Length: 431
Image 1 (cartoon, rainbow, N blue to C red):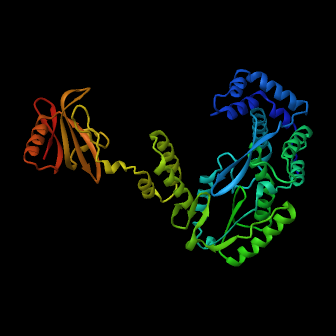
Image 2: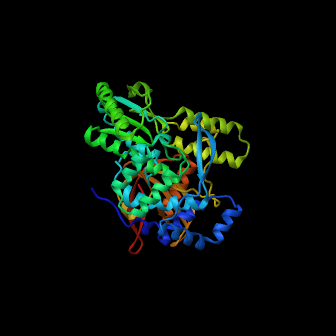
Image 3: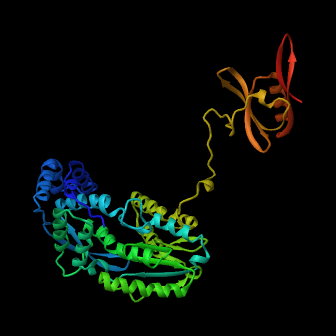
């Protein structure tokens, strides 16, 4: 089994620390601490690199606060700026050099280019196998982040990493959480380490249990199958592995159901074989915010955010209804050129290419200036079902077009001929 070394050198590389600094500072309020760090960026990063290199870096501690999210109350741990920079720098290296190749394709969250919408597209692709995805198993892990066994996580890291300083630093970060079990929800490292912790379950499901349609987002798991019986059996295997190997508990409220009757409520959407809806909770939250917000700029942000959800589902009408936004087609607004001239779609065709062709003349515009001169007519025509246009300065053609417009006989059919006149001259005419 491959183990990775020389990771600390990558963490303290100037570019890596600088990128981590910029990522942490992005969007932060202009406080005394942020101003100090920005003014003294080089010194701050130099001191952090020294602590990491000497294997003495330890998080300074965290503050806790409570947030209400999706009808759940969560206690979040927040680090100071310097510790956030270090964790960001470490996780960037672990993601690229260690973890990237360990995760199965259908693991999502905290992975580059693998968010909710990537997962949704993967499920849509799987659902094309209608028979093979007739039933769904949906389950998740009880209090996942607060239940992670620290010793198991550290042993897993040792199986993949041989850099002693990196292992020591990760152990100090993990054990800085003042609880017998668990990893802190607010740390930048927790989602990636949590993904790594469950990667063994993913590989067990795919390689040992041979599950074809398996999807995981954080601690939420969806498995699709043609058989309810197979899903019941798979659930027992997954429960056993999770409890015995990871010391975690699967929630008692797991569900096995037909996809068509209920849809898969996962990744913010309710997905069926033939259509997708935005999850009810997301719709309700957007509706409440739009109802109470009075600031136009804030309402624009909420509208744009909800469109980010609705555009991936069959929810366009819902979006227009909730936001009051009109479809462009409903506005009845059209482009009006300042010169008052008509613009015709289609490619421009030389008249010589239309010789002896019967075309349908649809419309025309007069007094057009081209590089050949002024007073030209541009004519829109249809040939074999395709619309195109040509430009003419033939006095005969222009006269006929003017007369037909006066008679209100547009459109009309005509064949374009090339006619000789004078001494070796030719012109194009309608016949």
